[in-house]
Length: 58
Image (cartoon, rainbow, N blue to C red; front, side, top):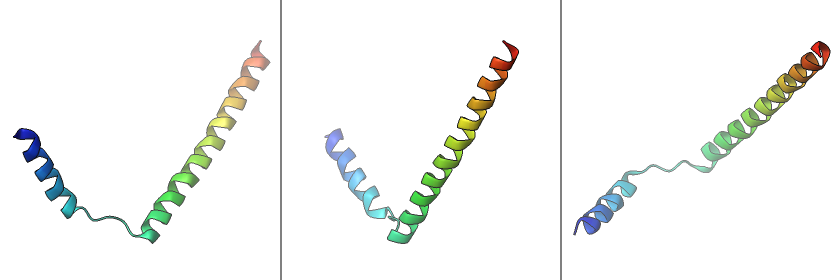
């Protein structure tokens, strides 16, 4: 009985969800991809600098 109640409440909640439109999805996806690329470049540069500094000290 509790399981049936759970699924009924899930169905009610899903009816209240507002899904993003195509433009919002594209904007969010572009933001995530752009941020990921920037962070990858930043972390790559930090890694390269640390490696260079450790080789310099060794």
